[in-house]
Length: 171
Image 1 (cartoon, rainbow, N blue to C red):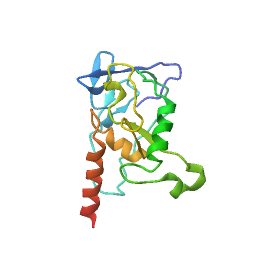
Image 2: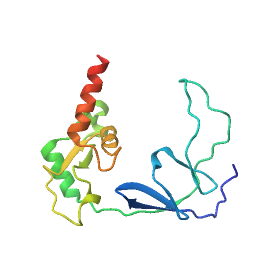
Image 3: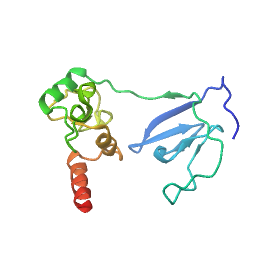
Image 4: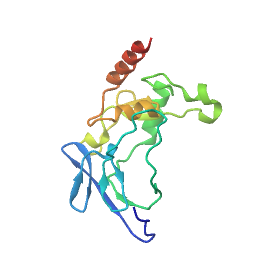
């Protein structure tokens, strides 16, 4: 794999297609971004081999990161007052797993929590009136990532149920 030319610009455009996140580059569409990585050749490559044993070292190769890419994305406005109202009503503990950052990390993490939109903003037909008690829910970053593992998002109760059943299986 060659080195990354410092002045080279890369454009990767994200666009909705069949309600699934996709990337388009040079007319090529890649639908599964979660399992892809960016390569110096300006193409997405899906990793072929997997490590089968924990602690097993991957094959020796030069791994390069830090190349600059330019992304064009649609961003949706969020109202910080709605976020604050959600936290005042629901608190800062995760509504799914109950994790509370301030109890674990102390003062430095006081009031830290992600706020999840029950119905994704991207699924709305444009600007809408948000109800912080019904439309927003505080979740920790891990639970938030799980909520967004499919499109449309998993339901909060669905992830809560998955967590309970997984914890029950461990006992």
